[in-house]
Image (cartoon, rainbow over all chains, first blue to last red; front, top):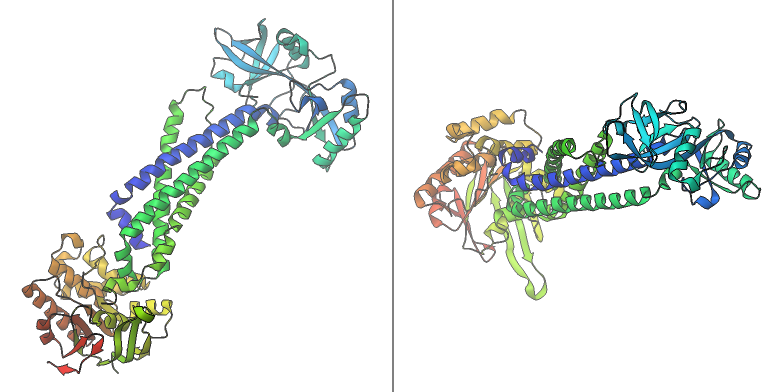
Length: 372
Length: 227
């Protein structure tokens, strides 16, 4: 192991190419991960913030908020299902919002809610809203006015809330009445009667099993006159948000492909290095080095190469993150950095392991010229 | 106790029509402080014999005893430990680790054995004795051929071996430097009361040995005392 480290200290130039390539791949991985996290966070915050463990949609909505409609009668039927402690009505309308003093429109998701949203206080009075902090970067200020939709319905910003975006649009949390008012200006065809909501957030009684209660809710509403429902766990509702699953699948595929490329880069690099060192390894074996000692040294070098590349890659990515336009949904989180680091280190180990067989097969007799 | 005893050792490469006998019923005994040159032309089997004596190759048949230990039945792991602890090698191409200093090239032997406690002092002593004190921190690439040979001799002696095996020590050197290297090897080996087998095709260096054994087509000729 000391031998391997000494080689890296004395001959750093030999490892520059591998470190350089792995650094670029690490930057790519961290950016891809950051984009995936940014997209996922920006798309799902409002749903993740629901305190209810289940979300009930109308059966014909294909689990879409904007297509769903739950009547007051259906809600009463849901409330009566054993295991349901309470329900909270939800509705969302996507609008353009203009910050006071600004000309350009920002995308906003106006939520009408009755409570039960983590991090969002109780519904504000008419004419006011809790606004997602994303809009702060666009100039929104507490006490300022936000004008919603084509008729510029004014709401006063009561305060900011965090991580409540939906489909990358800043959450604007208003009372149900205010939401109905805004919806009427954007989608008059989608106005719901009083007492109706798009979706119910269902809070469960202590000890109730979410899956069983979801099944019970849908069974209770299936044959009644109130309208059938489709009840999902919160995670399933997140996955049902348009684009979330395909985004995750696409990014995961690209990330895994990048990791594969990283493993191949390390494999090729150490295969070449091993080939070049065949004579040296033969001599080391002849004077008493075991294959295990040599392989351990190889792994140490692979890990150091990967670790150096990760440190440089992390610094470069943080630098890029600081200058990247705010429209790009990049979210650099420590958890992602750790996951990426572990993945790259594993890829480096797997890649370098390709040379293990060659090392084991090096015959120490080659050091002395073979059977002359 | 003899440093090396080869009894009826055969080494055959290939099978059937492709069979090549590299060593044919070889018998050789080297005393515990004896210096023996093994003289033969290229392809005579002398390197095969050296490799078998050093546990680098296993014989097809016959008995190999080094320092009283039968090694022909050793596993790969046992042979690795045997090479690390019982024998010293001086290779034809010197083969120092290019990114280690002279001192570190000696210490590598102890590091492989995870035994570095007394090794540092031992390495420093050897470096002094070999006249390399001023070059202890030099890398092989900056040393002369003679200095590299001296480091290689020091490395072979680091584990205080019972037997030193030397492969064509003068093949890449001019006659003057070759003579210096041989004097160094023989004086270091004799000074430690260690046995050595020196493989060569150069008849001139046989004068440094206690005894020369000739090898032709894998067969050892009768011993001849030369010193």
